[in-house]
Length: 356
View 1 (cartoon, rainbow, N blue to C red):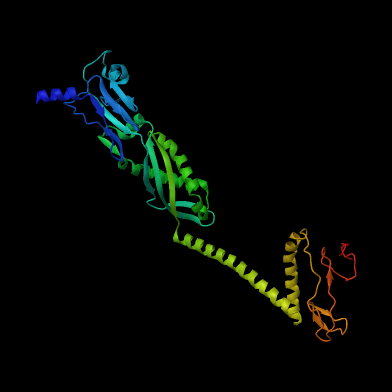
View 2 (view 1 turned 45 degrees about the vertical axis):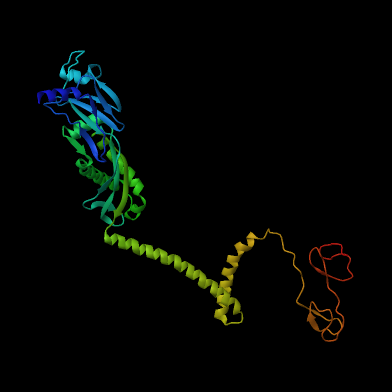
């Protein structure tokens, strides 16, 4: 057994942690206190999003970032000082190696266990509940280990999320109180509240070697009584919009009926005048928009004409009078302005256009 232990000590030349978990924040490399030693010149491999910390006699020693590191006295100044090694010390040594995960830990939930009291100008004291998600990461591994982790074997997100959740809820309560946002506007202020909470928590997280990278407010629940008031106001708003459309529709109908009822009684005439005034005002703007538009060429013709022989009325397209059989004269019109002119005219009396 002693020979096996000796071989084991000599083989401990590479220290590496391949993290296959999603929630491990700190991992202590398994080194047997009574059997294993770190060989001088041992290769310490630190992957991206990791930091390695060497601890000797309960004191935090040297800290290594991502890369491959050769453990020897010239790059272990703190550990050398703690252990009292002389320069050039090349014997195996004992130390604890901790890996700290510096990646983001995301999709962590927070929520108010009990209602949070806030003051509103309209409703007075109001109890609200809220929930959402947040994310954090370790930014100072040494400080985190000193303040939170200690010397445990490992440390996962479950070990700290309840504490962080309490901090977030406290931050939410403070943000809601300081923001003075009315209860009825909270639903549209989730982002603003989240930023206020993050600002409040930044200093607290920094003292633990952490930073809060994301925080979302997903929902704020109001008391049933307040929700009923909101529902009623929403209904009133919808009804107001619909009532306005209904009134406009009825007014249009009244204008139409009044126009048809020119010979009605005094009351109808009054309605007609009132509606006519409204209609005139409504049409004024519309007509003003087209006052500068080019005028259309209007053909000043009627649907009928008089026979010059018997004075009978015949359709304008008739070539002969249907009463006396007299040949009807052909009407002549100005090609420029469309004005009716005499068949003997050489120029249009309206626009001066020369006629053929």
